[in-house]
Amino acid sequence: MRLNKFTLSIIGIAVLALNSLVALPASFNDNLSAADKAKLEKGEMVIKNLKSVKNMSISNSAPSVQKVIDTVKKLKPAYLAEVIKVCPYEGNENLLESFESSILDVSSYVGIPYYSERAEEWYDLYSSAKVISKTKTSNGYDLVADLEMEPFGIINTSIHTERGSDYFYYESTNLNKLKYYDKYTCVKEKNMKSLVVIVRVGDSWVLYGVGAVDAPSIFFLKERVETSFMNRIKTFCTFFFNKNKGKLN
Image (cartoon, rainbow, N blue to C red):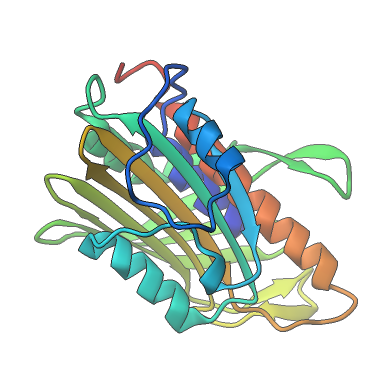
């Protein structure tokens, strides 16, 4: 499902493809393997499909991180994936502002390339993206947007962001039911979320994205739905992680 892909895009915005080694901050638990940690230290992304909330790798007391964890726990998702990136603070001092600007540019979601494993073809993640309303809050923005994604049609989406001196928080939620080719209801209202948090930890930025979906396990759709959701999360995050590449070095 392309909404998860949306999640991927959002997460991807903030990440810079840095090749230098990064000292891994103490923000992760034992769910992160030695191999995963080595990838993060080399500036690479780690993307994982998770069985449950208990398998999430983030472990940080920052309120913005706890908000992500609590939101996912409350949703109790059937499908869950995380995307992680770490980059140095030095040379990337404006990362939060850059990420916010990119993620709020909803029209840029159109044209994000998505590869369908089932069809073995490339598609646009979103075929259209229109902002319905946008409100400035004390520390961020609240938006409502219509995002068109096949095979689910228009996804009426709420987007909430917050930015402080050392963190950025993003959350998107579907406001309407999602139907698979207009036949089977895959996701009910407010049961699909894309979450991104960027938090400064010492000399590093920790970028953490989550795609979470509470969807019924329809036996003949389960594998397709899971693959579609997870691949879209990865696509969305990867796109935005690389979008600012070279700008903040």
